[in-house]
Image (cartoon, one colour):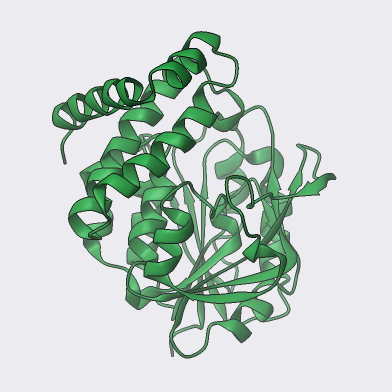
Length: 308
């Protein structure tokens, strides 16, 4: 008999946080699940800890890569392919959650809801809660996240997910396995370093309904190993390239109006990348039309060079 949940824990060099993650998974109040432990050739003590769970009754797989795959999404793909549950939870190895996380999500995963995610609290590397919840509202006039909601996935994309990734942490998300398609793990996704999770959610919610639970059930860890904490100029360029792939996908596969999409993405890109750049801000204000043409020309060239 298949389990209700398949919990995938992809790990790379998170031995300092791994035990807390495992404890928060195995001690869930809802216990009908399997656990798939994946390690992408860690150089710390992660493999030793994960191998100690080989005979745990809830663990169906422990896979330790000899060589690093080069992409966290290859681990996602591997875990989902192994999953036997009705629902999938990718529980990142450096985060943790409340013990009623699965039980609460399951109550919302009914009918035509294929994806659900919960409110998250930021935590530091010691696991202590920081003072703020994840802020989803920046760039939006309305705060739909102040309450629980259910929404058509296509509307969620056009109104919210089009502009930026408003599902910032995979650990907060549970989804039905049968809405996953092999084509999601395409060349574009597997090559991404900055926007891959955003691209995955865009594909995932496009043909289903999504729900949000306004409860602090997930804890999103900030620490020195996280790439989002080292956002340099090179990563800004990488993000720009990856956003061009996302925009092309939205245009071709989702039928999003190109002019509307470009304007929304440009405004968001401008806010993200020009906070401290006086020249870019002045250029945008004095010559907005030319600024758009320069940015989109650069993205078009990048897309052609990196077409999937």
